[in-house]
Image 1 (tube, rainbow, N blue to C red):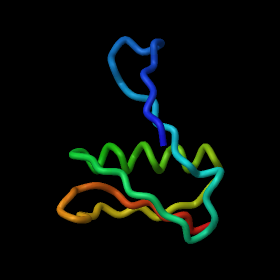
Image 2 (cartoon, rainbow, N blue to C red; image 1 turned 135 degrees about the vertical axis):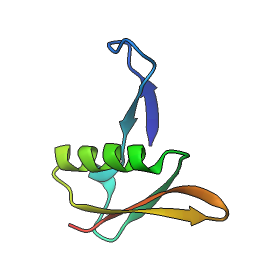
Image 3 (cartoon, one colour; image 1 turned 90 degrees about the horizontal axis):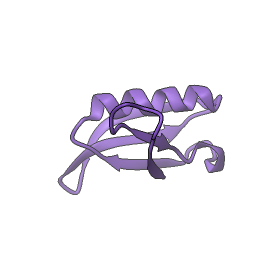
Length: 73
């Protein structure tokens, strides 16, 4: 998963790249974040664009807040 800066935006907002094309049903990934609602929104929108169904939960793993995204279909 990469985070790239977008020169076309007037502010420094990252462009998120999610590993959906390489994922099989049942696979998951964790992204640490202090803003889980925003990242949930970004991950869900990217899944829709990739025509992938996902389940997203805000979780704390090893004391780190983040989101876990599972591919479900």
